[in-house]
Image (tube, rainbow, N blue to C red; front, top):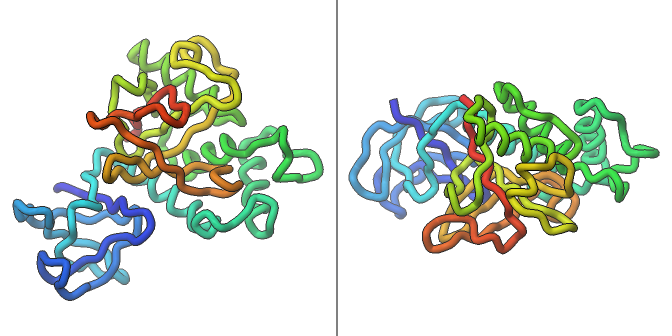
Length: 261
């Protein structure tokens, strides 16, 4: 059985009665919907079976917004991303405004390291992006060995170390010119002070950030992270080289390949 997942963040993907953009729309599959391949038409349309309104419906969908499922772990992570992105009103909900503030505080509670002073979710010394990523991974479940932490550098470093040692880990960290980003991977960046892949391989404490790759289209990557871009769970855009690697224009230092099952 071949499965595909919908990777169009903003508009989902229409399931149509026939392989044509003018055909009757049977329904819309939201981002992270999983569908089963019924027939590969040999064109840019695939005949799929998808859950619509609780019913398995067969129709045609454009493969521009479909990505073949490589593991259930990636499906679970994208479902978790969809949950939190929706919870934060698709990037509209702000960290210091109810009810979104309570969600940020819950992320800190689940991490177990305490809350920011005065429950100030905008406290400059308590950025919650890593707490948010930890929440994404925790909800996805099955990411055994992930280093849940208040700082991204902990698991960025671990991913690189485990890759170099060939050890089992939920993510393996590569240089951005070694592996192309795929849906479900994490993009690692340095923040404030410029760092390199080699620095991250040797150190587990530095200002950093990660986002989850959700869509690859027209030479760009759309990725979702926490505490971005305006203190919410939101979308960032990264650019690719003509060969499909990260261009490095946004302080990228590593691509953490999703190894979860």
